[in-house]
Every structure is written in structure tokens, then in C-alpha cells.
Image 1 (cartoon, protein in one colour):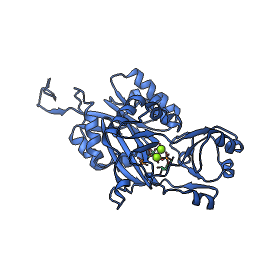
Image 2 (cartoon, rainbow, N blue to C red):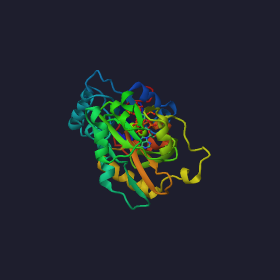
Image 3 (cartoon, rainbow, N blue to C red):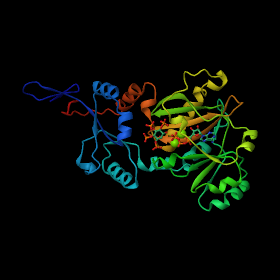
Length: 330
Ligand SMILES: Nc1ncnc2c1ncn2[C@@H]1O[C@H](COP(=O)(O)OP(=O)(O)OP(=O)(O)O)[C@@H](O)[C@H]1O
Ligand SMILES: O=P(O)(O)O[C@H]1[C@H](OP(=O)(O)O)[C@@H](OP(=O)(O)O)[C@@H](O)[C@@H](O)[C@@H]1OP(=O)(O)O
Ligand SMILES: [Mg+2]
Ligand SMILES: [Mg+2]
């Protein structure tokens, strides 16, 4: 007998609380950073139960789930999730593998920002001039010159597959060194941005923006003095936030809220994704010229302030009238 969201067994009057069951398929690293004890506790209090998916067992034999969250490498896993999505329309799979795939290529990931053409809405949002090099490193200087790109350039592996190598970036400061780079890659003009980057986290309809430290400006004089290609560290994914740093207010000023809302909403729809973040920089010497340089699927939400509450609220929007006899201790 079901009464007002409770399930009674009819005999001893035992109550079974309704649970929202969230199956997750995440790497160990991601599980550790995302499923922090405080988050799990809060979610549990709100009736959300996280269940680990065993990737060695058929997905359909597990559950039942209300929601599936996933971020694992490889096409094989993507195919399994896509197949499950097709055959289990009653389960909310966050997000569709084909939509996530779009962010695995550094060229296609920024295409929607270009198409969006946000040129006069509380500021301008574009992407740095960039080109793709598929092969033949020796031809890079010529190709770059033909495309009209200016030095310095940021060289990024074309494919982002979650591996450490796909995050190995280089700053290329002179023409001849360009041939030392390893295609396939994206070459992107380096945009001076006073060393500060805005990470815009999206969780469904929610938006949270934080400041992170980034690369310092590079001037033409420095360029002439230091020819070559230089690897650079993953400065902006460090946990250290620049939110409390003593910054020039013109540099620290967050991008206008209406612009962030419009950009996030558009990208959510165009990408067909609910969980991602956008790396955005403000061009040095301007107040409202912004560039999107990177978009990441299911980023490090553990570093997002208030992520526990924001994520719990997001999951609760999928709450369905289902009653299950699973307790948080199971
Ligand atoms: N076009 C650019 N102009 C200036 N700085 C840039 C540019 N592209 C990248 N950077 C700097 O390099 C960092 C890494 O670049 P990017 O975010 O594209 O790499 P990633 O490996 O995808 O990083 P993430 O860890 O966020 O996934 C940026 O956070 C920023 O500090
Ligand atoms: O390492 P963290 O948990 O912080 O998350 C990072 C995440 O790594 P993980 O998914 O393996 O955890 C990265 O994913 P891949 O591109 O390598 O797939 C990428 O999204 C980064 O941008 C995230 O850092 P953030 O941009 O949010 O600071
Ligand atoms: Mg980035
Ligand atoms: Mg990235």
C-alpha cells in the first residue's frame, strides 16, 4: 500500500523511504574527488542513494536506477551506455555519449561558441584564432603563416581522451620550432589575459563561476629573447583558487552575469549536455572581450564551492514517484 510517498508493508507498518537511485560509473580518481563524504551524507538525507556500477557486469542486470552518471574512457563504454539509454528510456542517463564525444575534440568543442556569435550581449565572446594540424610537422610553419595566425601559439593535442598526454600543452614562441610539435594538434593564438581564468561550472540550470590562476602575459620582447617551444603545467586545474588573491579589480571582475547565463544556456542546449565547465579568459586591456579556450565534460566539481548543495538539488529535479526498499546503509 502506498500512501503519500511512503511504502507500507501492510503488516508491522514498516516504512520504506522513497529513494532516488543514482548509478555511477566513474574512475577511482573521479569517485574520490566527486563523491566526498559530506556530499554523500547530504544527498542521503535528501533521499538520494549512490550505487557504484560494475563495468564488468551487464548494465541491464544492475539497478534499477533512476539516474546514471558516467565518465569513463573508451568507445566500448560509450556504446554500452548508448545502448542502455535506447533500451531504458525510463532511466535518465546523464549525459548522452554522442554529446560528450563532441567535447573530446578541441576543434569541435569550440564550434558552438563560434556559431553562437555572441558579439554584443553585455560583452563579446569568441574563441581564439585557431587551426588544426593533422600530420606533417615540417609543414606547420607554412600552414600557420598561410592561416595568418600570430605567435605565440598554444599547441594542444587535438583529442582529449582523459589521458595525461591529452593535457600536455606547449607554448610555441618562434616559427622554426613549430616543426618540433607532434600532430594531430590544435594551434591556438595565445591571448594575453593578465594571468586570470574564469572557470564557469554548469550543473543543469545552475552556474557557478570561480577565478583560477593562469599563464602570465607574453610580450613581443620576451618572445624574441626566448625562442622555442615550452611545455606548460596545468595551472588552471590546480585546486588553488584565485578568488581571494589581491588582484587588480579590472582583472578580477567576473564576466557579467547575463552574459554567463546566456552563454551557459545556449551551450547546454547546443551541446545537449548538463554537466560541463567552460574556461574563459578576458583579453588584456579590455573590459568585455572574452574568449572560451576549453570546455570539459564532468569536470572537477569537488572544487566548485557549494557543489554538495548544487548537485543534490540538480539530482532532485529528476525525482520520480518511485518507492524502493533500499536503505542508505545497503
Ligand atoms: N589561447 C590561449 N591563450 C592564453 N592562455 C591559454 C590559451 N589556451 C590555454 N591557455 C592556458 O592554458 C591552460 C590549459 O589550456 P586548456 O584549458 O585548453 O587545457 P586542458 O588540458 O584542456 O585543461 P583542463 O585541465 O581545464 O582540461 C588554460 O587554463 C590557460 O591557463
Ligand atoms: O581532476 P579534476 O577532478 O579536478 O577534474 C579535471 C578532469 O579530470 P577527471 O575527470 O579525470 O577527474 C579533467 O577531465 P579530462 O579532460 O582529463 O577527462 C578536466 O575536465 C579538467 O578540466 C578537470 O579539472 P577542472 O577543470 O574542473 O579544474
Ligand atoms: Mg582547461
Ligand atoms: Mg580541458
